[in-house]
Image 1 (cartoon, one colour):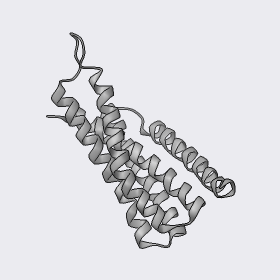
Image 2 (cartoon, rainbow, N blue to C red; image 1 turned 180 degrees about the vertical axis):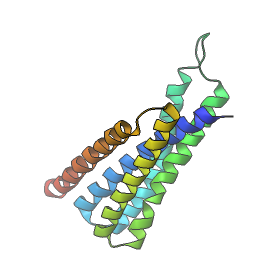
Image 3 (cartoon, helix red, strand yellow; image 1 turned 90 degrees about the vertical axis):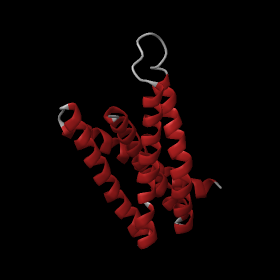
Length: 163
């Protein structure tokens, strides 16, 4: 019944949650090497980041309600918002598992593999729904995630030197 809202919310929330969390984990690891800081950031980001992404997508979807040629109803917009929050926060919280189970250096590596898996699986699904070649979507999002991780690592390494 709400398949468009589910696909939109989950694909946006999961992609945003995974890429942001990978960057945050790597950045905090390179800045602090503190397991406590990484776990705390994951939990805080699940709530704050999940709500921020959901509200941002809500606002974007609401712009499509205005006018005579409305693309979505108010109810559909709220379902998209809910699905975005749940997928964003849920995907972020899964990254706490490797951080809690492994030494931080190993957890960063495991989290990276987990993020690659999540992005690849979700992009294959979206490509299937859109009847597109999944390879392009997967490569684009993995390259973006890789860039975010590299930039986050260097910023994290620079911060202790500046402060």
